[in-house]
Length: 126
Image (tube, rainbow, N blue to C red; front, side, top):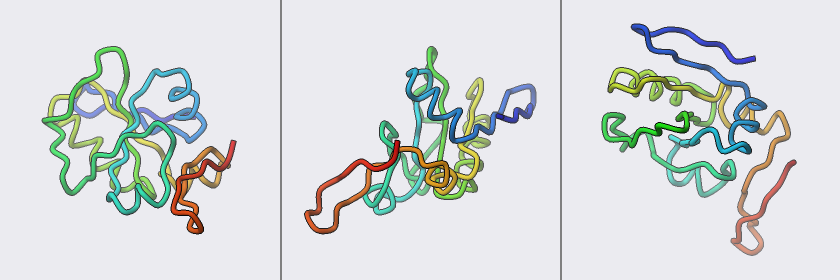
């Protein structure tokens, strides 16, 4: 179950992999991967957009009036930091995936990985 904390009156949500999957499938969120391009190329969550933390300026991210923005990374540490910076930059709310991609994989949720025999992307998981 998600956890919500208030940062200066702004809701900051920590979501479980299952909650993110449900919201992504329902097109209620925009999922932003803050890992490096190499990490993203190796494996990623279907539908996630890449915005590497090293190049990300939260103040320049587009806001989603009809969708919440959820950040994720490999373990949840970088995405939590980016989420907090997004709130500082004026986001009305922000969220991140608890445990990051590691938790997503542990839950057996779908991924796009690279088939090293062909170099082509392939989908794995449910």
